[in-house]
Image (tube, rainbow, N blue to C red; front, top):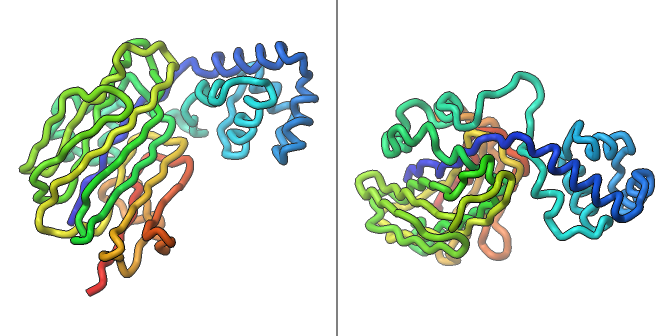
Length: 311
């Protein structure tokens, strides 16, 4: 069955570079290390970061972006005796080179991925243009479970978010699930469950997860929730998520019941809802009857896994 993508819409945070640079600079000074010594310690761990790059990070002229640079940041937290995440959580969203993109919450950014008058826009109305404009997403991990009757039974989502401004107090999520679903039950592990709307006519749930207070700018928060579906009579053959901005990290993990294993699975990417697939790679089931997609940094678009059932 067709399954519309959950929504990820977040604005690019501004002003994050000085925060990273300042904390990095203070930590180096407190430890009494030269940048050359820091560079040497990183090299000993197989992380060759140039002295110029470290200097740029310390002065706020650039921030770590590439996967190797982010691994170096994790190592720096140990070298500089900082708590885990003390540096990485201050890194601003990925900044693409070239032409400056419009704000992530700009309606054009949403239309570019979801198309005009999408289901989400019809449901949210004017709020669609302002969806999650006060937060940015650092990472998303989704675990999807398919039952013995080939139906979507649950979606577990964990997101690490950062406040783009001082009034951020909630995440709004929109999920379209199994066509004909009779009910969707929500469990929130991290965060506070806010209003939940289930629209059975379009098999869509809209939920707010509150942080419990307004965050300070650049403060991070972890949100963890699960949707349990009372499915209809059909079967499902794919799951996908759309994001209107670049993500730093996304993991989609699909579990299949051992009595209902697909014949073949593919992971794919499309730039927008009407685009052809830019890639469509076959992936094999592992020993636990799961498949996953972990593209790392993700440009705006739609990421998913599809599967074919044996006849």
